[in-house]
Length: 282
Image (cartoon, rainbow, N blue to C red):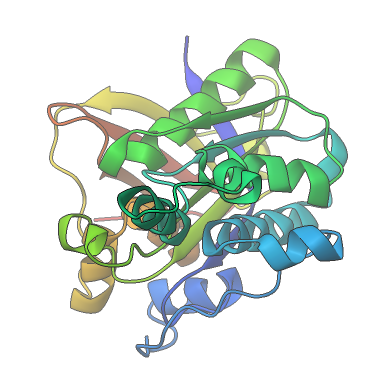
């Protein structure tokens, strides 16, 4: 079984990266990267009560998910989703640990339901009014790759589009000392089945979307980024481990990139840009 898909659209938010259009210019070298804290917007589509309770992980996931779906033109209510994160709501888990370590151990239901790993998926189902299939997974620093593989398997088996949402946010101390993620980062990909008879050398297969990808496992080392600041972001944040893929898409060039997955196994992604002209990496 070949794992192939068309990447139709991307949503992205991160430190110094306001959205995918801005990030694409930075990754392709068309604009400089300027260090700045990630600005998470208020979560769209939630009722007032849920909006007030939304944690940074929810804000990050919803921001990139909405952006990717809007750019694709697809119906969010029917789009299958895969959520990938190495952790959950860090500040909320920290508050629960503090309460459990104190005299008052009565945990509120709101704190509890926000502490579970699938909280962001639940908020997405409310915000997007979605009843479609939703999978939530965690694979530590390989969470982005695990989410991508899950989405591609879903496409290969079920023949339906898939929305991948990968996200990470900051833990407070003392958790930050053992999981030192510097800032929030989120990326969403709308992936669709490749055109019938898709072939990497067939220009008709590149007629729509941003790029076509084919994925396989490898033991080759992960691809790094030439820009030191962007490489530091890639290495720091599990959701940002997909930046080499995004860099190839932003530069509109054909390339083979490798991203982190398991300790001894990584994921190779062969990228073919959409459109009849593809620039090949040296």
